[in-house]
Length: 288
Image (cartoon, rainbow, N blue to C red; front, side, top):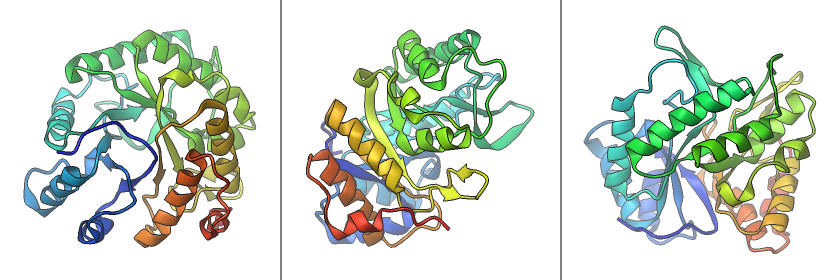
């Protein structure tokens, strides 16, 4: 498997694009993020194609199925599948979300935010430590999009993430689109979140497109990255330097060429050059 450190702008690997990527041979894509939940079935053509990708490119694993902040016991059978997939692909790291998605008795099809309390800091941190002990390494923790706030919050989201990272000694996956969606939905200042994130723990950045529903923004991953998200990303990179970043596009999946146009914008920003190409114009607010 191809290993090494990550640099530049990658994309999320999605099944409809895999054969085109493999047929192209060498590409400008420096690395891929794999949504592990889509690839956990043993054997078959999909696993064969993932192995072929992992032999040519560095990859990282991401998942949505752990319910890391939930009240039920952690699912170590699920984690064992993640660990095996990581070993099989040579993935450089594994990331999950600062959220929960129900309990043993009730599952919800979304990533729900935790209350930002000191009790929740301890709860989430202890569970992250359990996962890290099982995996034998630090994981990355991602901030999620939120649509409601808890009346019992004792700190801001950014302070909560920083406290958890310090207590659990984990790394962070900063999703700038999620931060923007949350700030717009809850009428908050995005800088309040961004300024307290411990940059020395941020190993990866997510960029994605939301769906403007009128009354709120939905983190749908089905549009180009919004202009305001690009602007926040550019400011963050100018202030803090190069951090491996990637484009997430999960729904209403476009042709690979369109996704690569988005990737090119991120790559230009990471290189410190003004992205004056045609792709930048395509990256504006095109939400329906």
